[in-house]
Amino acid sequence: MRIDKYLWCVRYYKTRSIATQACQKGHITINGQQVKPSRDVFAGDKITVRRDQINYMLTVLDIPANRVGPKLVDIYRKDETPPEAFEHLELLRLSKEHYRAKGTGRPTKKDRRELDDYGLDFDDNDID
Image 1 (cartoon, helix red, strand yellow):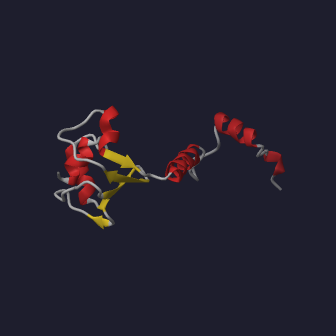
Image 2 (cartoon, one colour):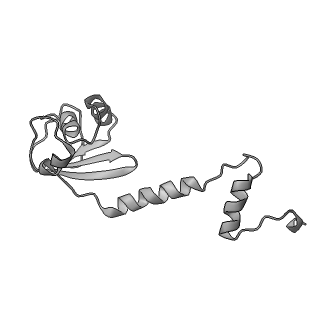
Image 3 (cartoon, helix red, strand yellow):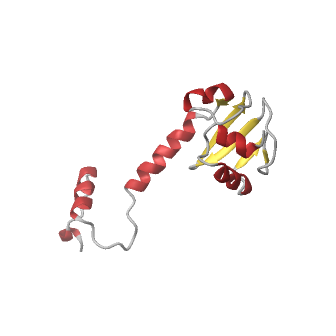
């Protein structure tokens, strides 16, 4: 089975064309080598999928005949992604929430309250 079709069948991509584009961009590797969408997948192959800033590591257990339901995905692949990858994604998400771009003006009332919760004080009287 082709790699783009396999990734679509085991529900890593919503459409096969998105899986094909990911292969063309170099986000998919099999046994450490970047692959084209037409590369065949066999049982025992190690696949790395770069998606949403996480490198998912999969081992192919079997080849499905068609796209499978979400409950049956574990029959065809073994997910070996380290839990640290998901923790890193959570840290990125939290840092983006509290990031304020420079030059966006004065903090809003909500921003000031959030800053007060951290214990930071920005009084106008402190400036000398």
